[in-house]
Image (cartoon, rainbow, N blue to C red; front, side, top):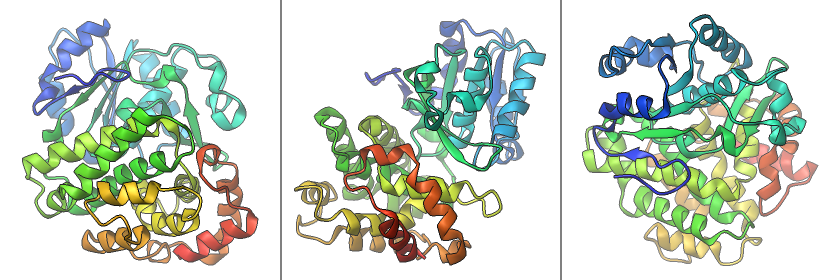
Length: 376
């Protein structure tokens, strides 16, 4: 089946088998596949290559780091140009898809990557990119249906690139690609999807369809128990399908914006020494931000609670903490290596993050400090 949203994803078990058909539809003959060392080491790159018809000339870049960097973008871009590629496939988690978007952008845009960052006024500078296909192998970021990409720049900042032109031309969402994903990655990615749904709903932007999609994502993740089931049994076919759908829905929902959780996790994710997982960061930070926003979102907490299958009067932050414990999420940022002396720099980064545009309550300097301290 196909979902009618922006780029009509191919969503079904076994959808990866349609890769050659999708390439033909887009007129791509020489794709660059951006992926990561982990997928390459377990033979996933061989799998996708064997599914692509020999009529196509395929080039691989498998050096995508856990948080994609400007250096990696430039490395992949050089391969794209040397091999006369005419399209990009982002194959992996959000990092590989985000890196692929940046390569597709710079393959036909002049100047430096930094010129196109939202923080630098680059939103309106982005025109049509080279053709891009996104193939997720985790259920978390939803980058396959989003207009954004996150890249750590050479100056150390983790910046957002966003434009309708960064929406992949096609997405192949095959839940079977997530079978056997380790529990720790299942948990972190799943909490990323949940945070997307929650923060999108809490955004003050009036977009009922996107909000409804977010509600459905929460129902799949928690009310139906899909995250815990996928965490406990990586081969649970129904749970894996629901989690990939919820991940896709999370990105569809955050077309109405995100919030302070992401501002903080983007700041933390810029630390290339700690190499922190984005979804796990979201999970740890979410309860503190929920408490901070408590009295600034009307009846939305009640609606989220009902979508979770809970009584509408529950303490939402406490429920997220209970869920985190069940799926092995760290109790604090300090368990992930974050120290109090890092906070001033983290605040500086978080205060300038574009996610603040749609947060229901923008923290001041002292409140940012308290939020970071509360999560340590």
